[in-house]
Amino acid sequence: MKLARFTANGNAHHAQVGAIQNGRIVALTDLVPGVPDSIRGVLAAGPHLRERLEQALVQHKGGLPLEAVRLEAPVPEAQKFMAIGMNYHDHAEEARRAGVPVPQNQLWFNKQVTCITGPYDPIYKPRVSDKMDYEAELGVVIGKRCRYVGVEDARSVVGGYFVCNDVTARDWQFKSPTYTLGKSFDSHGPIGPWITTDDEIADPHNLTMRLWVNGELRQEANTGGMIYNIWQQIHELSQVMTLEPGDLIATGTCANVGIALGKFLQPGDVVKVEIDSLGFIENRVEAEPIR
Image (tube, rainbow, N blue to C red; front, top):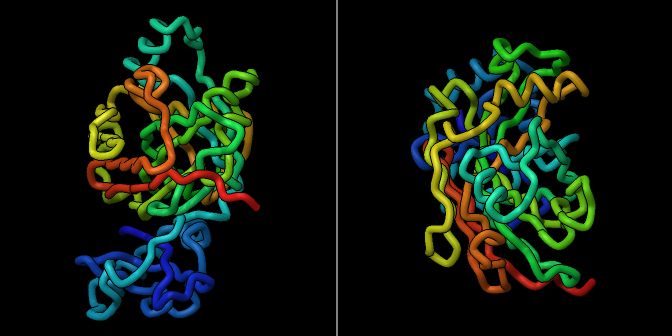
């Protein structure tokens, strides 16, 4: 199932959760009475509710065309947004050639959740950064509260997958050993376009991921290029913290990030990230508005 958060009829203040079928989106409240009003809540309710929703969706003939709605960030209220650094073999080699130390263990940082924005919303070039970069990534959303998860059991706690751009202010990233500041500027966490539940993806480690800037292909890799796979990542995180439904994980980027090419993002640029079976997000870079 593809679960999306959307607004319709120009009502930007009334977001609904829906399921996508045949190019249309159906509000979950039209499928099952009393359904939670967030994707996080739907995931937390467990597989029984999702089975009911899927059965009702097959019988439903209504809904709105996707082009008639605006897709919003699917999980804007996530409690955590964790991301792993240098987790693709080619990106680690790219870093090594540039003289950046390659970690010997999983390198984790958090993107503050205030960075989360929608799949087609603008991303803002900060007034205080001249080195705004892109990172195409496969995103994972946790579907079940868990702690101390074994590698062999990790898939059972996955709610689904999404497309992510781990937008980074490189100058701020390297000012601090924790990376957090450079990864957490407002709007630097576009995600979406929806959550594709785990049952629809046969192997999340065999998906092609691509990123374009202004139509120029910059990044392309198979998700099998990860150094630490998704199950190892969940195992590692769960040794430290309780993972909750709706928590987000960005699983790493591949080679040819902007800093390696000497090409940073500027206002007017359009960044598109696409992953097989998960759809795409596309965000225009704009100058940070003066507030």
